[in-house]
Image (cartoon, rainbow, N blue to C red; front, side):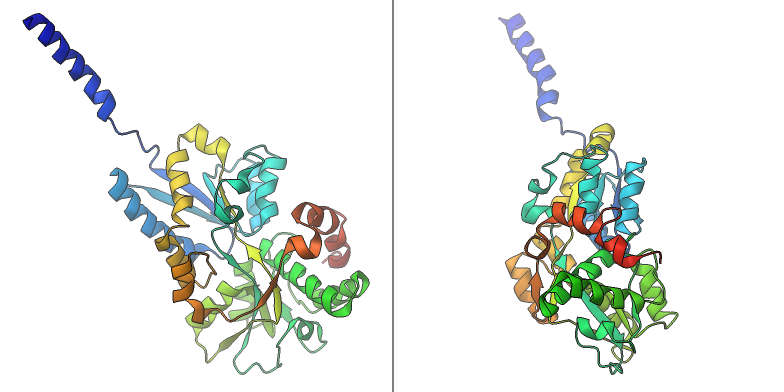
Length: 336
């Protein structure tokens, strides 16, 4: 009987550690590859998530950041940059990771709410104090007396939204693709320099004092005004703009190779939590969590948002007709 009891205790002792053992949280570093103007936003997100992750797992985590135009970032990943997560500003720049690299599954948009987009924004205008050129809507940007700053739509998702929003506005107002083409050609002609990304375009407008209006995401326009003062800049939200989603995903081939799927998934899920949504809204991004929406509603003026699906027939059709090599954007942009 004593031998049986000892044997049973030994079996329990051997089994207990396996049952009580906490799964390893994986590597203590991950890389978030993001769009050009999201540095400050994700610095705040990272600080909050790292604290929460430490409390949950006991692990000290480092989140490294990479920022550039989102299309350039997508190419870097296809060429071997090992991103655990991507937090981009355009669906096509994530979709290409599946289409050309098979780095993520075809259904990546179904893995998180709102088509894997935890927040959204829209192209808006930043003008100089007093709005000396009286810029109120998209058609003002095509006037011959106005100089406009936004980055190169061939390298920047930010600028591609500007192109699409302007095209959607002109197509609705003037009634045809031909007139929309003419409008966008005038808009492009009013841009004295095309920087590669949104932050470089901001530098051109703010530090080099070039141009009458900067077109960028609403979040960036408000951030610049807050940083430099309402006595220098003011934000103009046009009558209509394009819904700009900010899709996110883990890069499956990387997280499975590194063992970083648990922390990478938790990082993206954090963006949907009340704390994450609060941080996003604090940086002037529009969010979905009802309590946070209510709290920050005064920060966001009403605007009619059109969708890629409604105006351009969806991202796949848009890619073929506007964004692919030799398509509409190339034709209108020319050799600039």
